[in-house]
Length: 380
Image 1 (cartoon, rainbow, N blue to C red):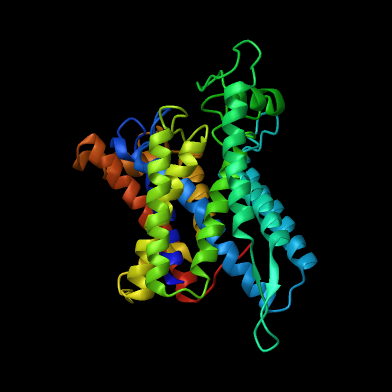
Image 2: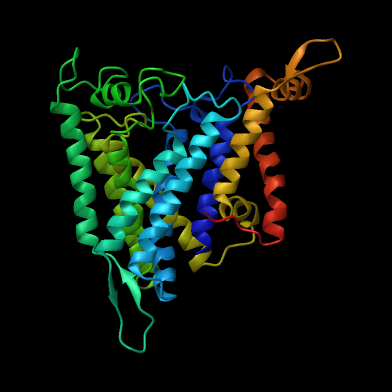
């Protein structure tokens, strides 16, 4: 599915764009996360990637089963891959100082790892072989059960935040410090929270539960695309489901706000709907219509997504954490030297910051290009 790789590539490039501006003080509003309730285009990036993990899982598992991999071996693969992704995320959180007294435990890769572990094992054990003797056996999930589990996670998460009292605050609070998830993070993780807040974590423990539902929605979409249905019907089904999820998330917003940091149930519905619509459009354009001439830059990112994420994180850390003396004897970071010397003098503050972010995307593209050119794809 070229569409899936392209969609993933666009998402990774967008992630780099919003994560590495020239200055955090000068950013166009759509390229920032919502402060709390509500959403911006930036808030759509992470759930879209998590959704695609679910879609990819259906294709990957079917391929492995067709090659004769046993359920036990596949379960071991799921656990090992989850542990490795979590470890890489922990390494990136610690780099370069590795201060274990305050290192952040959770993070983007850690959330992906936990969601992949839970959803992967569920998908595996709900799957069953099908096919006649002359057909290649393949795994097929019980879609109704997966949808039911996702619904239970979303309703259960809302109920926990709504009705379980938080010491010192009471029940039903959805603020930054007074919600149940923040309390659990402070109690369990202690000093190992997101440094920007210190009292809550945007990829916290409790909010990982609804994030699993995001991945399960991706699994349902992947199973739909992997079916024997006609291509136009697949696109129509994804589009209709996406619209329904978008409307449901928006309608329920007054009762349970769309909130990326809390990963609220409405956020799952809303962003899941967006991801379905985006994938439907990509599938129609690339896999059905064959419009692929413009896809190469996105394939460079999409076919080495994990490598792109790691490189972007390392380049950003190295360019902002290490200082050197300039010609005037002042200490500078590489980020500051490039931004102040080559971008700030030539544009308004907000445009200079955006131009630097685009430059960051280009740098990672150039680092990834040899891998794509030589067909080296890093798999975990």
